[in-house]
Image (cartoon, rainbow, N blue to C red; front, side, top):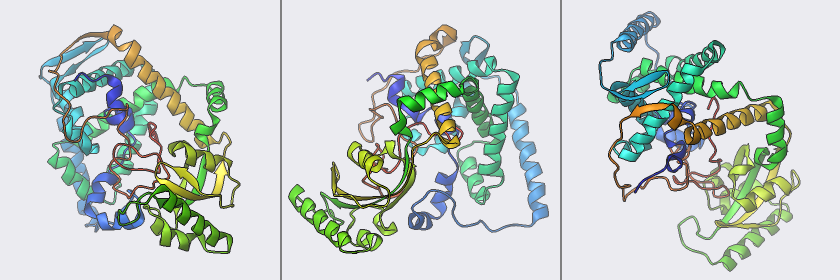
Length: 401
């Protein structure tokens, strides 16, 4: 089955990958701790070695990666475009980096359609890098250096990360090159987004940018043990729990006792996030309910939610401005792929088309999501993606894009 660019969505996008951290790798070393935290952020500190020896090792490691980066590439040219070319080694290096950062790519990386898409991504980013101004390049390179520093050089899990890199035959220099291409290409478009563009997008889609700290109690159509409930049974229990709250019951304790999703252990807390990521009914309640009040049960595909909005922000903050700027840039990148890529591509190798794997499957709705590797229990008030992760939106994440 032939797959279009949109079918792969964010799974292969360098821009989407650029903001990932090695938390997915570090999490493998302490899954129990991650599960307790309900997060894929930091895990326990790695024991420190002698600082002098560590500094020497850093110099040696940098020399090794620099030597590899400077090695002459005599591999076959598999694509040419206005301003540059892609070699087989470059293509394979980027594919290896992508697979390291997004392990779910492994099931697709030998598929012809996927490899064709990856090659198009590399042509797009290579071309935009060749057209970027000195200022845009400097900004992108700086972001790449900061990413490497945060996620590798200064990481508490550096030794573990290095092990994963070695197993994947990926060097720090290759990762840095990968990130730099992404950040420079994003900067090419981001720098052209004006305040007027941002205001226009915000005014047109304001509800997409509402941030809310929400807690809920889910009475699901299946209980904690997986036993099914009828709609009437779920509604009856939800009404009973709401009555307990009306009579002074503690929300957090009742959430722990009754809620049927992963937020129960946290007293129903879903955290502060964009409500656009929630299913429609839950999103509407998060926007319309008065802050601090517990609303009547809201029905979604998951069951009945008793919702409390702890706080809400619906103004154009600096954080929202930056997000909109990156979203607009991302749309421009997608438009370039769809409308202009063919005009700047001179030649490219076509990989053989293969069938989509029967097990696991390829993305069917345009995006494999950024949260696929978190491994946390789904918060079922949120829109669930293909991985089963919920509680987050499925847009292109761009802490740096």
